[in-house]
Picture (cartoon, rainbow, N blue to C red):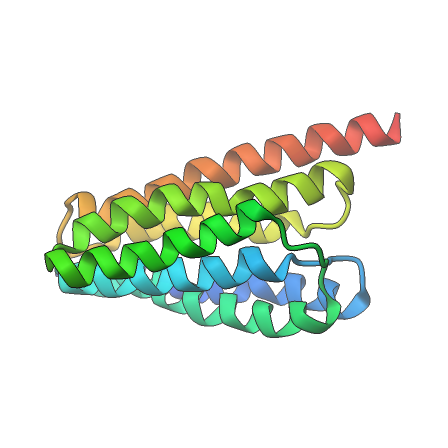
Length: 193
């Protein structure tokens, strides 16, 4: 592993964890209301992806995903008391999809199969949060999603091995976060107008 990969890997972990500080602050202030089911599914997804990346030789670049898993679980715990309610059929479908990723990996011994499944499920798990943010565009702390883009933009080149198993999920998160931030900013302007 090159020196720059070590630096980028640690930066991605530090930025990733620090990006949650404003989110936690806003949860406690009551201005952000996370959807607990989305965050629980994201905890499962980042956990599966982290272990798949490590198994596939991702090295230090995978640790941003591991740190994200821990931070996501902290959001779940807070969301149970301070978050939005309303679990829908799509929420349950996303949960089942995340579990399917675990099952497929266990049956096939192929971490890429799990990453493919959970990457699709991750996009679907975003639906409840997108729906909530569309209706209440000020209910999300956008800095978390912006810094998520930076975190994974640093984590990808920090990966020890580049393959679909190690790169697909973080690349997908970058795209999803950029789209989410764009939708929320547009909705904030529309609601303010």
